[in-house]
Length: 97
Image 1 (cartoon, helix red, strand yellow):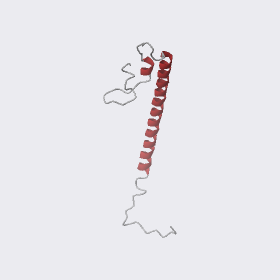
Image 2 (cartoon, rainbow, N blue to C red):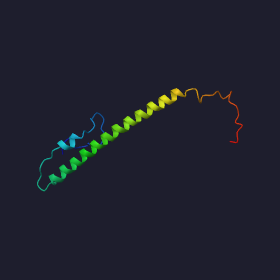
Image 3 (cartoon, rainbow, N blue to C red):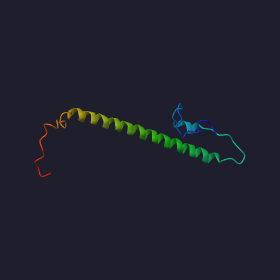
Image 4 (spheres, rainbow, N blue to C red):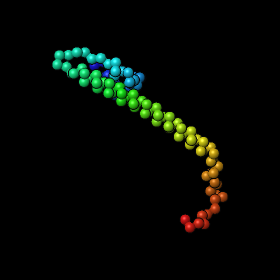
């Protein structure tokens, strides 16, 4: 099994994250009565496609997270003084609630 395929699913410190091209480029030695190479390479292409899809989804999620964080920062700066009332100056609630 090539080094790119060994342990690619786990996250090891100091090891670069797997790239979609790694499963596509992986090669295996031939063995008598070994696995069907057509199935092996089809599965590797499937893994590479899934990895590529997950990378795109992660990138989109990170962009959305940053957009939400920026919106939250703007909202907090606009309304910084709105909710911060000194409890000593707060009047008791006289409404039905």
